[in-house]
Length: 328
Ligand code: AVI
Image 1: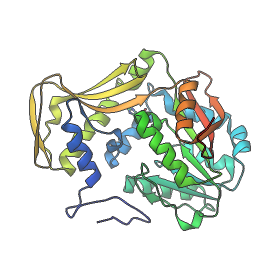
Image 2: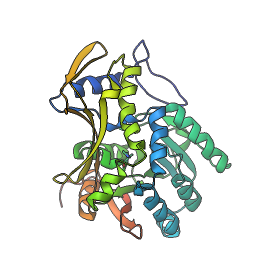
Image 3: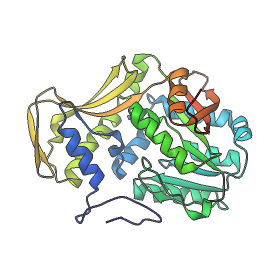
């Protein structure tokens, strides 16, 4: 069954379970190092907790990216030009989207998100802020090719992917996503993408393990979501949040660590964890200028301009859809 919401596509079985969620969780928990893709954090509760994270003193990315968008908006707008349909991958309710929309005179705004209620709520807030602007929310998993609403077919597109969410994917998945964005947006498209930078380990660890415990609640909410949506009985109180810096891959990792031996079931399948064993729930890759350029090129995008905040913690890159070529 396909849930129709404005436009699109979350596959559910007869009992309303998101089949992709169940498949990822069951496969991930069966691995020797248990692991679940980070995109499943974002049910309505997870999306709200993430908004709280963005307000934390320790979490620099949102402030840094907002600083870039507000101080460099004229330059960014000059390169993008007017009349583009802005397609945002993962809908933003934050200040970033209005900053972009008010700088560039877009023809339409198309937020894409898998969290339907959150998507519609933030789209409504934006539509109020920009009364003349067509706002066409699409509930979809943007990891796949998305069919955009017919209303925006004739406009040139600007993909907007702020927040360095690209860093939450392993390189192969990130490349696939960039390629599918290229296909969704078409020839002549531009992409404005936030890319977080390698920096001091202490700054990174604090950003992903804040003193108030909001990130811990965000991480643990995944287990709560599994219990609720997939008939699970994971003992959430026996899991604790841990953030680790992996220097080999230049990434922060988040884990849910069992504080004692536990056993549980998800959708009728039984799993066990030894004390100290973890479920790896997120990577947050940090980039250098070069590593970000390599990734964008692999995904079919040619960087055209790049900005950083004053403290050089975060970058925003404007890239252009590359023409397919197989030779240098
Ligand atoms: C959405 N994403 C870019 C966030 C990040 O920084 O990797 C998710 C997050 N995880 C913990 N804190 C924030």
